[in-house]
Length: 165
Image (cartoon, rainbow, N blue to C red; front, side, top):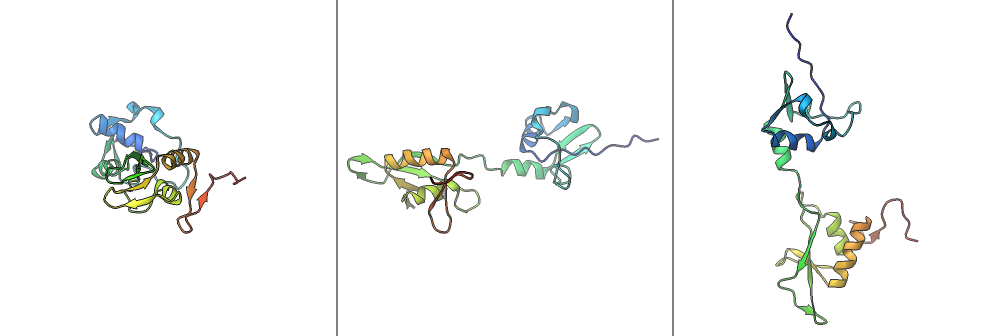
């Protein structure tokens, strides 16, 4: 009687894909650290095998080309960065700050919506929003606290579960 290979479902987790790339693309299922798994797979949710990102080969788990592409296309950039504005002039004797909000999708990110709500002006030459040092500090605090801005009205929205009180 042939040994039947059992298809193991692997949770949809980027950490597992990254681990497989680090070890050369293939590893025994038992060698994948348990801490990389986010937990069990809920009924009806996708896993790495059914998504075609990994394949089971006996006891080995191998990453596919689609899995490598998913890891390389994953946004690993910071949500924003703040630096000195190179081309913006001084305001009240203080150099301006440039808040860069990269987006891999083309849509405005939470950081871009928030800095725009704080009346930051976009400079195509800088490829960033130009704000004063005080507004840059306020932006960092609001972003860290979980604030957002409406994509439609541009008004500040408090973190979920909090009121404006």
